[in-house]
Image (cartoon, rainbow, N blue to C red; front, side):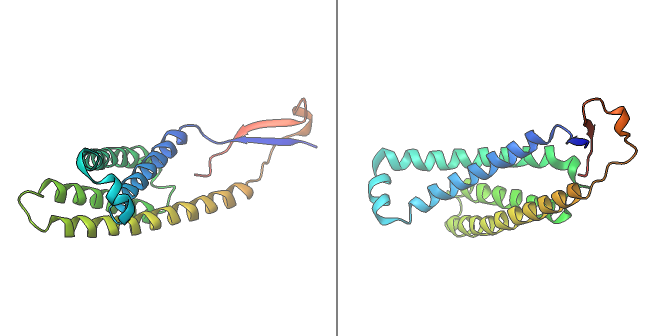
Length: 172
């Protein structure tokens, strides 16, 4: 019996890592924002210097989230033909939502109702994240289906010394 070992192309790890870091930052941002809506935590955390530190951290994480999300989009751009277009449309919409929340934050001293826009953009961002993750799961399922359907042809058992054949395959 011949065993086939298929290696996927390298280089997708950095894109995946940036996606995970982006998701982690977004979850962290959401947790910090939700702290304000839990009465017991709000009493303990949002007083004096701790509250100011948390608000500053929230702002810094927002800017970091925008930078990492843009880097994630740029590094995954060359996979655009291999992934659903919907994933990229949602990703661009997410970056727009992040930028909108930052823009509303920057205008907070000039515009009295900045929090309304900030919260609407954040809520929309959460819905877009769910759609982006769902799109990624569907894309991954399609990828695994294609991988299972790969057939190796033109390999002679006589030319395989130890019963295993190592080759490459890229199905996207």
